[in-house]
Image (cartoon, rainbow, N blue to C red; front, side):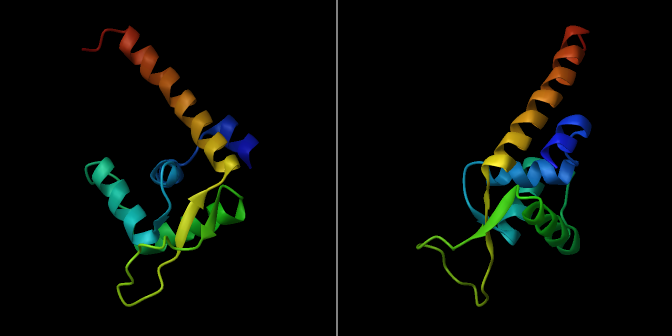
Amino acid sequence: MVKEFKRNGLKPRFFHILLSLADQDLHGLRIMEEVSQRTDGEIHLWPGVLYGSLKHLVEEGLIRETDPPSDSESGGGQPRYYRITSSGRAALAAEAARLSKYVAAALAKNLG
């Protein structure tokens, strides 16, 4: 699947989920909040989309479920925490490099 991502790029929601997990393990609700904050609400991962995406990313080996951190507080449920894998990190880095080429081309056109 990583080869496919390199060729076609990551779906924006996959990119943002992986980016959220790049420096910390998070549970689903926190991933949803972080993506929404980072994109100023442009990308809102509704629960069905979020959990379907997380399932897909787990199946592809880009993330995995992990134990909650020892300092996590339970809000009454058992939140599932996720961690990016080395394959997920490679896919995220490849997508960031792919996107940076587009940004560099736009900047070269003196767009302001």
